[in-house]
Every structure is written in C-alpha cells, then in structure tokens.
Length: 372
Image: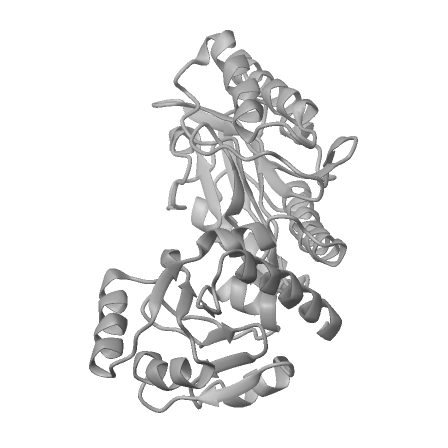
C-alpha cells in the first residue's frame, strides 16, 4: 500500500505544479483516504477526521487527539499534527510552516461559513495566502481506477450479488414489508463480510417503485407487481451499486414491455461505451431508445455515475455533464422507466471501460425478474 500511496502522491504533485498550487488541503474523506491510507470517517458535514496538506516536499496529516494514533498507524508517509482548538485555528501555523502562497482546497467540501472563518483567521494572523479551488485536480486523479481498486470493487460486488440471489431464492415472499427486506439485505451483507452498505438500501414495491429514490416503508409485497431493489456492499472502502426489479408471481404484459425496453436501453448504452466516446452520447443512446418506445419523459435521472471509494463520483453519465470516457473508468449504467400510480422498473449494472469497449462486472442476471 505504501508504494501505491507514493505513486498517487507523485501524480498529484505533478498536477499541483501544472496548476501553480504550492499546497493542497484535502478535506474530502475519500480523497484523504486515497492519498494517505487514513480511514478516519467524517461523522457529518460540519465535522472532520482531519486534513492532508501536500506540498512538493512535505506530507502532513492534521487531526485531533481522537484520531492521532490511528493516523500514525495508517499513514506512515505523513507527518502527524494534532490540533487542540480545531483545524481553522491551526491553519495559520500550518501555512507559515509550509510557506504557502497558493493554497488549493476542495470547494465541494467547504461550506460558505467555514470559508469565511478561514479567511478571517488568515486576516487576523496577517497571513497573505491565495485560496484556489482545486476540485478538478482530485477528480482527474481518481476517475481512472487502478487494477487494485478494480479488484476491491469486484469483491464488494460479489458480496452484494450473492446475498441478493440467496434472498430472492430462499427468503422473499408476499406479505414481507419493504423495511423488513431492506434490513435483511443489510444484515446478510454484513454477515457475508461487508464492512457496511454503500448507501441506504432502496426497496420499493408496487406504486412506490415509481419513486427512483424511495425510502423503504411498511408496505407489504404483493404478487404480480414490480418490486425494485437498489443496494450495494462496501468493502475495504470500495462500493458496489446494483438495481434489480423483480415480480413475485407472474409479470403482466405491461411489466414485460417496460422491462424489455429498459433492458434493451441498457444493452444499447453498454454496447456504445468505448474509450473516447462522450458520456453524454452514451446517455443519449439509452434515453432515445426509451423515448422511441413510447416512454419519453419517464426516465428522469442520469444514466449512471462513477463508483469507487464513493458510491457517487465522476464520471457522470448524463445529459448534464460531458466527459470523454477512458479505459479503466468504472461506472453504473442504470436506465429506468417510472409510471406514477403503477410503479417503476430500473436495471443497474456496473461496467469498466476497456480498450475493446465496456466489460460488465455483474454476474446477477437481470432476467431473474421474469422467474419470480
């Protein structure tokens, strides 16, 4: 792991030099872990387990006494600094020590209130430093996955899929509530070795499945209606994310038509993926097919998102942001159709871009929906 971290830091330093940034402050939890190995977790948005400060010569991990020992054990390449009165008050000392003139920071992780406090602290300490947004640097650094990262993602995916297959074959039944199903999936994934779930599990039955991000409730499963599951396991920091829509009993013609439309849209999009293609173009392939089958406007969200240390990370596969795809990018392909009052169908697979196109990482057959 030490050599991997060294290579990542070396790549980062090249980017910092190209952007004329002499120090990068890293606050995003996943970026902090990626560059140091430190697994400390931020419990909520306005709390932090620490920050990295990276220059062309020094690596510094600044945290509090609760995380000091963990940081020293997990991030041996870094100087560990323990602050007593909070990160903001420690910043002037850090900036003076590192002789920083241009401080890169992740604006996505910094609130307006925190930014103002930092500026005020610098002003009262008579420190002349320029704050520079640097989100694109870390985005570019992590968007292409290393082989070791891909292996961890595959392990997390295997746990999630094997648990779900066992659940569908042996446990699911009419009368089970959405909440009960969600808890069983989480419990079984943890028992199978997952560190946690990638995100709160979605289980939505009947009309509830028309809500793409439905919250599991007390509605009971009924025969012959769509039941949408969106779940994932997290292992060694890496996430998986899958969606399957099934039926207990016999799917009717409406279900079959919508299901086939969604599956065909997914297959067409996956077949279009290759290095150099636009992410918008891939989204358009799926969206156009769904529209051509009479469901225009019924697929409201993006086609997919990157996945790795975070369950949602670049690249976005949507009409909103364009990225040229590269080999070793990993992301989801998840078209859906949602009909208010009836329900919805979404199918989500994870893919990795290769020189020859896209390789689907999933082994769980989407057509399992037709068997139940």
